[in-house]
Amino acid sequence: MYWTSLGLVYVIAVVCMSLAPESPTDVLHFPGFDKVLHFSVYTFMMLWFGQIYHERPVPFLIASALVMLGILLEVLQGLGGYRMFDYTDIAANTIGVASGFCIARTRFGGLLHAFEIFLARSGY
Image (cartoon, rainbow, N blue to C red):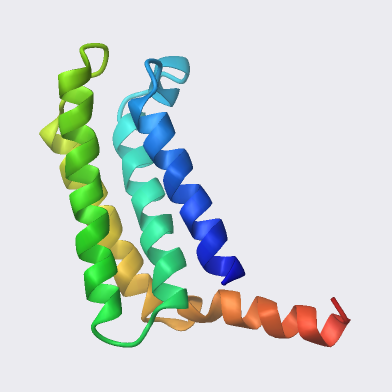
């Protein structure tokens, strides 16, 4: 329950930052930063939830929901008037979700569980 709550806080932060008038890419300028940011944010979201919900078909549903979220946020940015709709952002988001999905199927997919075990053994 705690991991899910933290993940939802992260999703809310992504939504708020995606719809804010000024984006993080307005502050940091180097070629491709925007795409790297989209990719890494969506990779982390999928990896996070992929570790919590790993029994089929839930990861597929989460991946679909995150791709839809990325598309919806891009559409809303385009309608907002102060941000732009960008197909390449949707592509970076989708590739990030796919990457997070794949990473969650490796040993890295057990990091949250390993951290819980560490906390339990440490007495927290």
